[in-house]
Image 1 (cartoon, rainbow, N blue to C red):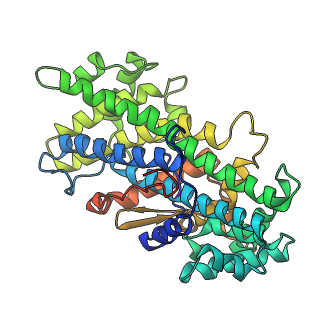
Image 2 (image 1 turned 180 degrees about the vertical axis):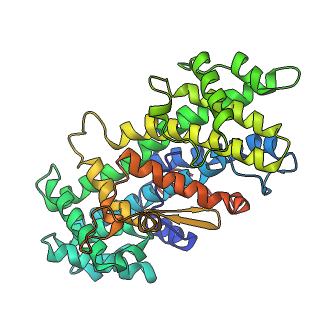
Length: 418
């Protein structure tokens, strides 16, 4: 999942953003899907997969219902997808602010926020950041639009003045590094970078992992007789997966399922493995969990299967999107943008909130300096920073499994044709 990061928090704020971009022109029927239209379908697809696959692990689970069985990766996925959609919606708000400013520049930061309809408690965070960006040399509308990207992120993280100062500095650097000359074009480059990054990651992960799950469930429905882990490993296949590798990963998992910490350094454990082999092994582990004699054994197998899927997600699907080999000429650095946003990242897993700031503060201080805040010492674009943060999120969720079954409402693109 790209445990992709949460950009917009409460539903009330999402409604605010929907209203803010509702005046956008309607998409033509012959145009390709918008990023938010893709996100809506992906979120809905993950929800369907989550219920079908989880129904194997908990036969009492009903459509629309809840379960206390440890959630598998596909139960996390709709929430992560919704988070990405909220980030795209935030980018749409920033883009609308830029378009409005092209027609008539704002008289002040307050005027820009008023025109965008940003009100309530989130306004204070956005306003403070925008004003700081103005102090750092950004024009009013550029500053307001970039600050609006943080609307309903974890604004509490900015209460630490060290985080606030570093975040403002990084946003200003992104603006000045943009491949454009005019101020609004510079701001739009930053906004475009965020939207593309989220959209490409959303598509890549669902196409690969969601697509693999759909193939697996189709295969499972087609076979006769009992489905066992051995049958999964010998009869189910995915493109590029190597059966011997899947068998090895599965056998390793059975031997180490109760290790503390749970296995997670797979590049060292499985050197040279094609990581799609891990997906086949994960489905076999989920089947093993279904047959487990006790809840504790079942939950341990599910958790290791989750690590296998998440490694494939983050190592092969998300990382190339976050740090592309060739940068788009009209973008700013994706890795620098993700680094700037890292302290503010947050995801609502149903009724359970995870944020990166809490994770960072739970770890030893990296540089040992009181002049820098721990959350600013990490970057979501760095694989190991992201990977360990996601494992932290998993462990939090395992303590409240039913929380994740409060499934998110997929975001409907307000700019698209009804």
